[in-house]
Length: 584
Image 1 (cartoon, rainbow, N blue to C red):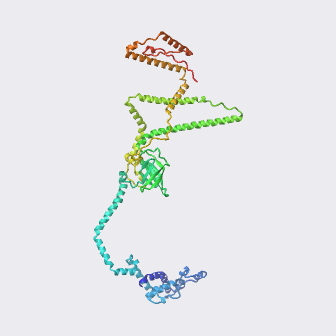
Image 2: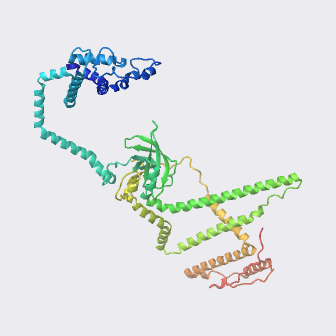
Image 3: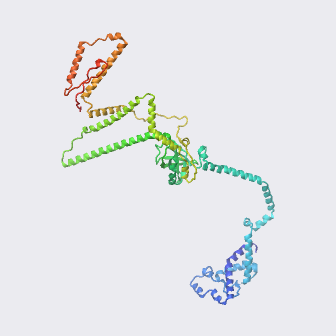
């Protein structure tokens, strides 16, 4: 059949099952005549088709037998065929029967079996056929190629290639080595030994980029897919981490990173702060902190942390006290205004005006607190100044160790135990060992901002606030507080003032006598020229002393206690102050 074999094969496969069914039915009727009526369509089948629009494509027609079933009856090819199969039988007759069997009006069972055998042989040839790759070229093109002598040329080229087999194998080996060095070597240096991470020459394969935030550049940044899962493992690393949500301005792409802060302090690190993240490709992302895992950052931060915490606590307490006092004053004022309004509406006279004297106790309490603080500071300073000069720095060092020592020690121990493994385990890696990040290496992972070479800071502030004499104001406040405290405790009265005058006069006489003795020891001639006081002077002094004694109130027994002194001139009794009289 030549080139028409494939078309004939397609038509044969189309009618093969239906023609086979027809001959099997005829053989069954030949076997038993009673099977003739059941194997042919029943009257009910035709009645079901009576009310249907029939065509050659009706499915019910296609299921009926190909022709009337009778014993030993050949298949008619021109008439008596099921209308649904007329076109297929005509094509089968023209493309298969006529080329192979000649012109036929009927097809016997033996002829049908012959056709089946021939197409079975063709199917076996198709199954064993080779050259499917060139089949698409067509038989004519294939024959042209075979006739052109190309096979010998191709064979010569193949022999030449076989002669260079060793060179080709060497090239393949070099290519394999290059690929191993580029990919496998990098894989080993990042998944096994972490050489790229610790050598700091190239970024490790798990480092996503660099985060610029709070005057620092964090080079240890990991990309995180599940922040909940990663944070549960990251706490075991002992590293201060800031989870940031990164967004591209030019698109809707987002990602989450975990940045490790290993240098500086955490004073200005908080949720909501913004920074810039640069990935490995140099693309910039807007980064915002969304979660923080707190751990020590550096020894310097641990040293200053107790002082900052104490200052913060004092500030919070002062703020709370001020807020409570302000609220109390506001409540009292509101209550007073409401009371006055009620009394005014009732026709009663308003209350007496606000008396400032009622708050004398408050000012006295403030003075007492200031005095206590001043006393404590004075005792500390006095104790410090009483030390030997070489003991002073030791005392300062001891105080620093007491305050900052525990914090620094704990931070030092934690910083030495920082571990990379939990950070990678949180991302799904399987790390079988500890990957320690010590203090020097951790410091190198976060770079602090520095001035460029040749740049200088300008410390001149054109908008600086004018300096105020706050030291003078503080001194006046302390002085007033002390006076209020002394007045409130009945320690400042007229007798106290007279006592102070007596002490000042005693110190003055001691100073003058000491200077006279010193001059006499240095120059005896000059000492002889010093004349005793004249009787008039002594009389004036006696009268003045009498006046002073008369002017003092004699409401009680005055008891004089002698003051022992090496100088007889200083042995005069000092009067004790009279009972206290409050000064208002």
